[in-house]
Length: 325
Image 1 (cartoon, one colour):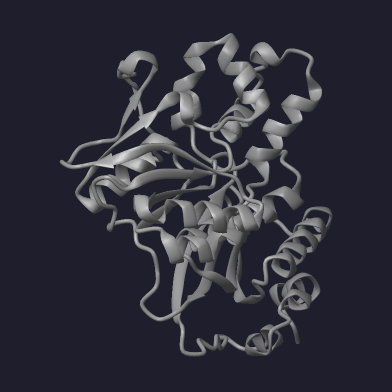
Image 2 (tube, rainbow, N blue to C red):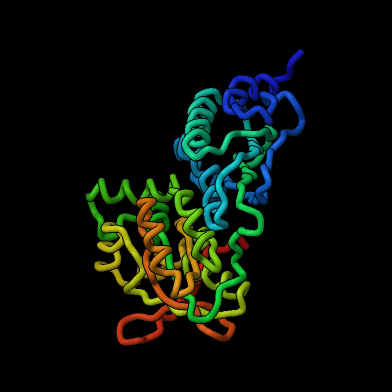
């Protein structure tokens, strides 16, 4: 006789387990074939009220849960290979689970990262989704965060700060955007549905000396990379790539700069690139359609990253990143 958990898995998640090594989710483990590559493993959990809001649509929650992990893999130069899912639910809600599973399956197909297995449990607390994702890199080629060198160029993908502003809007802020519904929707979508830079994985492993994704805030995550590498870094505020809505907000309110560079949830890639590899990196990135921008440089000496404005004036920050504790 099957249990309620068995029925839930069979109905919503077995259709996503399309790779042979998942055994149709009928076993307690799965097989991931490495094929001579190194297997890269990463795990991230998202929690209701912390990483997403209770009334966020279930399809966006599903996409965020998987994509934040794909972002980590991309920063390591890894190609997605599969994932396992832990889902902690207060109740079995069909109207929530159906779009959640559908979106998860669509993203698994889009990014070539099939479901391999997982666990479903009940919880009296907030909804929680934990994904452990696996990727492949050629042996010995994973890009670490601890290998940046002084004089490496500091490069970031995409745009910074959109998600932080999107969250502010979801919490009631409107700022200078006023009735610009389209601009506000763009920022909210960036908060709800990250765009993992999977297409950059090969360019990163071929040309970057160090990399990590930006999840907790540009300046704070850069400082983490600096600590791991035993270097420091300087960032030119004017060079940080911003979307049109974010730039409009900043133009109207200069104080929002700190939120842009410390708010987190960007899920862009931060790279240290040797200067003699920069042109090749930019060319490889251009071929993927992912924009990359030089925003500063790594320097000798240990210390947190520093942000500079016009005229070489350092911009002090009360905080550099989001922190859970």
